[in-house]
Image 1 (cartoon, rainbow, N blue to C red):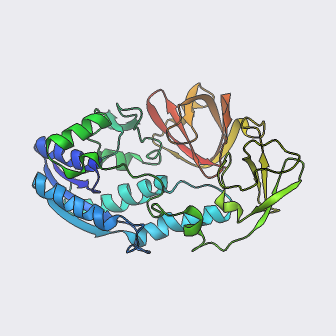
Image 2 (image 1 turned 90 degrees about the vertical axis):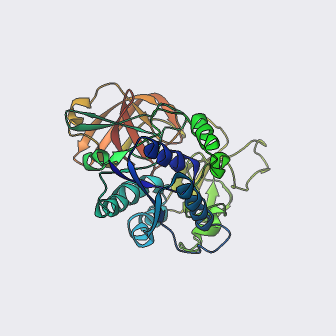
Amino acid sequence: MNIVVGLSGGVDSAVAALLLKQAGHEVTAVFMKNWEEDDSSEYCSAKEDLEDACKIADKIGIELKTINFATEYWDKVFEIFLDEYKKGRTPNPDVLCNSEIKFKAFLEYANDLGATKIATGHYATIHENNNIFYLKEANDKHKDQTYFLHRLNQYQLSHTMCPLSDIDKNQVRQIAKQNSFEVYNKKDSTGICFIGQRRFKEFLNQYIPANPGFIVDEKEQILGEHDGIYFYTIGQRQGLKIGGKKDYQNIPWFVLEKDIKNNKLIVGQNNNNPRLLKNNLIAYNCSWINDDIQKYYKKPLLARIRHGQQKQKCKFYPIDDETIAVDFTDKQRAIAAGQAVVLYDNEICLGGAIIK
């Protein structure tokens, strides 16, 4: 097949491209640039990543094209990211980036190049049965990325390959080393790509005006001031700067709730505070991979409320066409509005919604 692979300059996409080439496919690589703001600063690794991608493509013997999706990224991902933070929620831009950029804008570009399918270095499995496509967890459960891919639809899955579905990260690095890829031990990218290694507050202050308010305990006693509710997330411990208060135990504080209306940050000292532990949640903006979601209503399922979390036993049911309720068997700590709740039937990812 004619495969267009997204080559990021990292080890995963490098090995994905190599495996496709070794399998006899006609492979073209594409390096996507999704961010232009302050891209010449010390925080953006795009230049270094492109250099790595060029070396990888040259070693494999495939053509490398570059495409700039910065405008699409700004409109479809970053502006939504900012809007969510202004509302006091904690969004996950990687989910939107996958559904709107890597598997939409990139897929359209690849189609224009005459691609049969696109491929990426994601750890996930795409399974087809009777012309219906399913998203399943990868063999390497520690690296599985189905949480980030849960908004993909049938068209996107039918035109995508995930060459790393059956191998684990250690094998990927070994293959890269055996083939003399300089990136064989390159660190995995972490955090939000457009923020890089800089301080989160420093970055966000460029786009959202500071709106200081009070940090209060559960009895509304003022303990200090925050720089803006959007800087904090439920369950957060670091950066509160309220330790050593008189009449309080000298133990860590945690963010329990965000009072958006009154611009207050409510904190407590118990890591397992009842206000941090919830049995249920409401989520909106549902996205389902298959059309048979109704058969799963009120059935025993599994769910994640954050990437990397062990799947949790749950049931869910619809509230309306766009909203669901999810009830967990065990209490969940620090459910954060703006993050995704992703549902599974064993290893099959059904889709998910945004926690409200």
